[in-house]
Image (cartoon, rainbow, N blue to C red; front, side, top):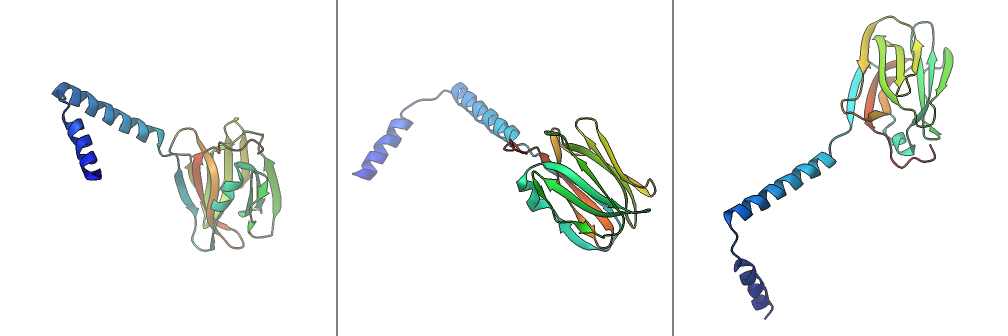
Length: 188
């Protein structure tokens, strides 16, 4: 009896006569809905790097981005190189990477401020980093010598979300990961 009920439902649906014009409109509506769904789910993440030389142990702050946006940056520098890095995500500082020799500099971002561009220089090791924010601040660290790089997100309305790279007694190389600003960060 159940199969007969299903058969009756199918026969009922098939009893309607659809004009070719109505089918074309339905197909067009389906295609538009599909295109709209893809636009809503547009990609936002991108990556720049690695900038620097070889060697060092790999590091990644990918897990820290779950703590919130980048809210502060610590950079240790000596006369020639970027020695170490530490980034605060929301209210949590990442593990420090790099060496211990040199001066530690620290910059705090304003609430809601984000890094939208990173440039720098390297030769064997990272020598200079410049963070540019969406509030127009320019935050330079290190010395102005070496091969230049300039990194910015591939997609609009995205910001620096975390860093990765390689380090030992110095920062060998850096990678920059961009994505949308976290929407659930009222306390950051």
